[in-house]
Amino acid sequence: MQKAKRYSSIKYSLEIFGTIYLVGLLIIFLAFGFSQRFSEIIRAINPRQYFVLPAYLLGIFLIYSLLNFPLIFYRSYVIEHRFSLSTQNIKDWFLDQFKTGIIGYIIVLILLGAFYYIVQHAPVTWWLIVSIFWIFFSVILARITPVLIIPLFFKYKKMTDSSLKGRILALAEKMKVKILDVFEIDFSKKTLKANAAFVGVGKTRRVILADTLKDKYTDEEIEVILAHELAHYKYRHLLKMLLLNFCATAICLYLVYKTAGFSLAFFALRSLGDVASLPLVILYFVISGIILQPLENYLSRIMEKNADILALKTVGNKNAFITMMEKLASQNLADRTPHPLIKFFFFDHPPVDERIKLAEV
Image 1 (tube, rainbow, N blue to C red):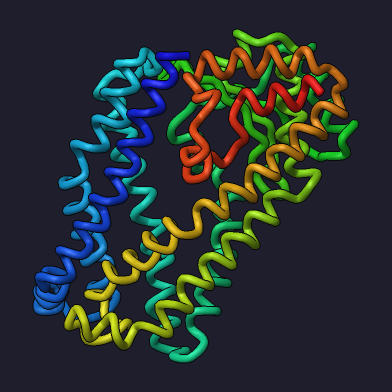
Image 2 (cartoon, rainbow, N blue to C red):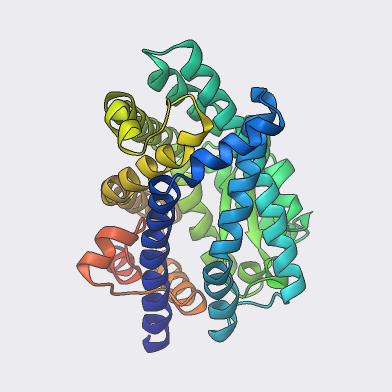
């Protein structure tokens, strides 16, 4: 537990520092006119919007990646190896970072392309239309993630353990949840942490089990884990989280809409439709995220608790739930008893000890 506390403390500190660091970089980039000058250089090369936005975004991606590299490397490679949680070599780590960067760039380019187009063509209602489009796009992303994105990082294979697979399919049928199939992914090539998930939308819905979980947990413990994941679908938690994210996005963009005049003038920017204003929009989202995150975490913890209750009720095996939580806490170095403030700001799941107490009642 002391090791888990040290690990968690470092992760919390790095996350806080990373947020402050990002806010500082954005303010510097805006206050010293770097964003404006950078966009002018790009326009001098080619003033057409189809070139300006991709080129500006690529430049921002590269600059931030270089400035943020020490923090990312320390947080996701050094710390994970120091606490014996990672099995990934540095070459594969760099490859994953490269793939993540390309995917992130493409996704953000689509979202921002829609943002600037809508801002220019719907000057009054753009904040609402953009919010709707972004949430709609997130649904599409959730649908394609299991078949296009996850395979870029992990190898899929259908579960060959017929006994466990049959148990999982029977559980899904009992909970009236339709799934495509049960898959196993090779987590062990990158991490010693364990995980399982119910991913996808529509015809891409599937259960995925990390080999680090399948090989170390009993069938009863795995059944409880997946009952929890299926409970999220049963309670429509994904839809509720989408609505919550829509509200948070709409609130943030509405604040941008109402205060853009002052903010643009303060940083000597021409208009919200100019790509030079992008760091300002990002700054709004970072600050609103800091403010709204505790509320989102609180609502998420309620959903997770309800999923635990349904899982326990469905499977009827509290001992398997308790031993599973004990194993997960040890394997993932989870902070079992966080300070109330840490829980308030960082935890979107109830702490492990709270979940165990729930099962013991």
